[in-house]
Length: 536
Image (cartoon, rainbow, N blue to C red):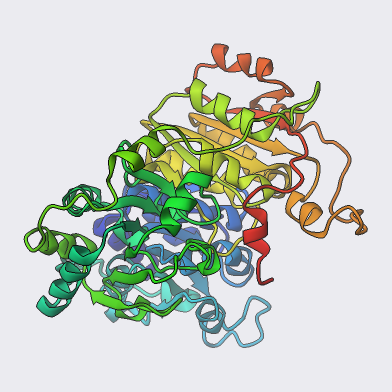
């Protein structure tokens, strides 16, 4: 007999799922096995929270829809931090979660799953019965893929058990890109023609549109920068400023502040990207281009909003603007070429390495073709700012919800999405220990993964935010041998206290996991930390 659970697994596979992540319980046992039988690779994790973030990172890095399989009740609640991150980041994610039967009103697994997921911005959906299973699955898939939403498809246990013919499914075509209005394109063309110092800020919505944006920036004399999640979008361009916002280097921040026109391409102008508005110069005009009309002006007032796909809008503008020098002067080119403007790295001691020196050395020693995943904490600016990536697919930043502990799972999902690249994780000791169970998943998968722990034996953000005059006993800890913990899981692990200790990378095959427990020097609070806590 073919059941609804069997049909769901088969349908999701036919819609294009390649990987699914999760922890199997009685409620999602059958649908998970149906996925596997249909050819979907299932990654069994040690915690649902890790599975959720792996699926999120896989979707971000691959450009497809992530799939997550969960038990009802506690399986879903365990995954909620990861699901919240995905929902806030508009990750296309399909969550197949069991649900209690309508009649099971006294089940201890029973919670209002629809209300729970809706409260964090995810979209609740469900399979209603055998006769609607194909329509229900396709509707959920389309919402995830086309609307870039995290969709939780509830599968009640009694419905899962119903007999159902798998039926046929027509894979829905992706919608056509939103074309901008003629008047809006003309208005933006006029703004670009009037600007002497334009800067383009590429965000999540600009991923995949690098070529046309580079061409338009070259035509109009615009400098290029990105939000954190789009790092790498303009990699290699001589007028690429890198990340705009809290992670900006001094030269980048100064040049963005000097712009007379900022154009956000799929970039929502958050407080992080513009340093709470302090990167907006006096008299600077703000323009925002986005395929989501609700995003226009959502975070701050703008002078012009253009409702349209980033690529389509940029292409239309290319035909409407003339060539100008703009901000791309010889003086600006020389300033960018001179470097980011950091001061000397002088914090290292005999047994503690400067986190900047560590990051710069890693950037020099590791292959260019890499994916960088970053956890949250005081350290996070160092891998974000100092580890280069080849393109926007090379940076996976699961930090919309600002939760620590997501980095390791992020790295696993990204590594599975791009096995052709070395994945490099930057995490803190607090985040790594919070997620340590997934070291077992890393060991089982044998991924090409370098895990770099920026280890200050503390929750460093709190230590530096509240200062030495506060009682820091709750956020500082005895030193932990994290390399030994890694070896306990069957992984290679080494401790790094100086640049010389990075010689371990010379004998590493780069095809298996390695953890570096880097004992970092006290930075007194990283340069971006004040931005992170501004307004808290």
